[in-house]
Amino acid sequence: MGLGVGGLMALAVLFLGVVMLSNVGLRGMRVDLTQNRLYTLSRGTQQVLADLKEPVNLYFYFSREAAAKQAPLLMPYATRVREFLEELAARSNGKIHLSVVDPQPFSDDEDRAAEFGLQSLHAGGGDALYFGLSGTNSTDGRSSIPSFQADREEFLEYDVAKLINELGTPKKPVIGLMSSLGLQGQFNPMTGQMGEPWPILTQLQELFTVRSLTTDVDHIDKDVDVLMLVHPKGLPPKTLYAVDQFVMRGGRILLFLDPNAGADTSGQDPSNPLAGMTANHSSNLAPLLGVWGVDYDSTKVIGDLERGLEVRTSMASPPLRHIGILGLGHEDMNQKDVVSASLDKINLATAGALTAHPGAKTTFEALLLSSKSAAPIPAQRFNGLSDPSTLRDGFKPTGVRYALAARVTGIVQSAFPQGPPPDQKLSAGPPTAHLATSTTPANIVIIADTDLLMDYMWVQTREAFGQRVAQAFASNGDLVANILDNLSGSSALISVRGRATFSRPFERVEALKRQADDRLRGKALQLQAELQQTEANLSQLQSKRNDQSSLMLSPEQEAELKRFVAEKARVRKELRETQRGLDVDINRLNSWLKFINIAIAPLCVAVAGVVILSRRRRRRAAVAGAT
Image (cartoon, rainbow, N blue to C red):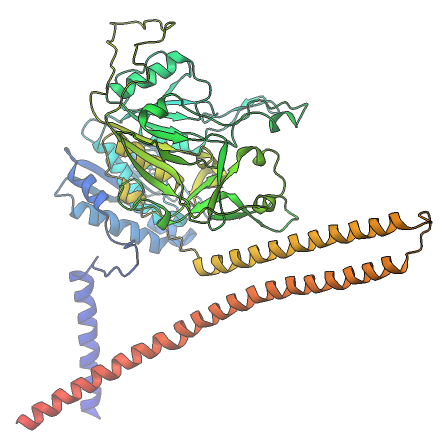
């Protein structure tokens, strides 16, 4: 008995020793088994660290005692943040100096935290609770994350990498923004105030120097790195020429077109709601698209049965599938282009299609694609659309995957071969010679949709601790930032943004729902057609009667009515069977998943244990036989 107790004590001491050694020697080591390697430092972050020319000071502020009392659930996340920052500092070759600060109430550390702009979180009253990050560089530059939000844990690496990149790159690329939509916020006649800027613009202003350009400019400044054109409508010849010559000089362009822009309020009249339904909400950039080697029909919207999302037309109505509002997945994005390879989900609405112009000398490369269950739909059908399910009436997929966004590269010719337009006035400054051919290969990205920039397509804004927090549920903002990063010559943060999601949609379940939805839609159309035919038959019988004023039904009418009632009951029964079949298929899939997780996975572990144990016994038996 004594030997047994001694053995147990020895094992306990050994166990404690192994745990202590692992905590010291294996701290920070882990195995990342997630599909997208979400917990591994990305190449983009490593590139940000490698590109640092001068040291960066990071100050991690966390009020440990206040958090333990007021918000104990923050403690594990705070540990995660601190370990991540320590890992960054360890891999920076001494370029990042990390200081962990626990600001006590009424101390100099607390005053400095407030000076950095960190936000005090009073989660449960009491002392101020700081949980944020600030940084400085050698040129007195400052940047900070006012507070870490636990529900933004998947964005932790990106937020920190962006802060370090801002401190390491004092000069931001200049983006020239020319837009006919109110990205800066539109005037609200009801409140008499300007609305909030779109979150997409707020995000871009954090990463770039965004310079607004009017739609009647006659030149683009040479210090503009990328020109971002959003929904260009009716640009005058002088502005088209300015854009043309910007490309000739080697300027890069991100262009957003749309056959039916939801944010286009032109033609709307508050006193006449029907006025906006007939207005033209499309945009084009002819004749520049032609010389760039791109064809685009501004009168057609791409509908897609497989990628159509469910929407609600009212709170009381059930969700309906809208084949004009598309949710693209990883498989719909170009995996060879850096701007789209790492993204998971892009939402678009009433997008157009882009194709390479026959005989074009430029290279056309699709970035975003529809599924094969897609086809063009006249853009006019979306004006005043109240029932999205009607879009499927007569819809026939073509089997073609349409390019919804594309990159165009190569040497291009000017759309103004004879020189500036006749009414072009020379701008102030030295005259610039006309260029008929681009001096360097053009690099132009075109997206045939502007609605992807709107809030409801990719981000939700909520209040948290007295500040507005934008929570992205799609990668629309990442796509735009990636493209501008790439066009301006920087790609360090692209791979980091692409990792900022844990969303894993139930693709099999969604496919089952789409199939059942199509069957239900077909049955509903069949019922409606039979109803119309029966009403026509009843009207025909009524017209043949001698006494048409009588309310009594003739025998023929009674027989026709009974036949319709029986047929209607049969079709409704088939509708219920179709819906029940959907539930059966989904429940069967759910049962299989439960069986795999509950039974098969533990069984595999048990079998592996038995195999390992049997091998060990065979080895011991072989050793014993040899001796």
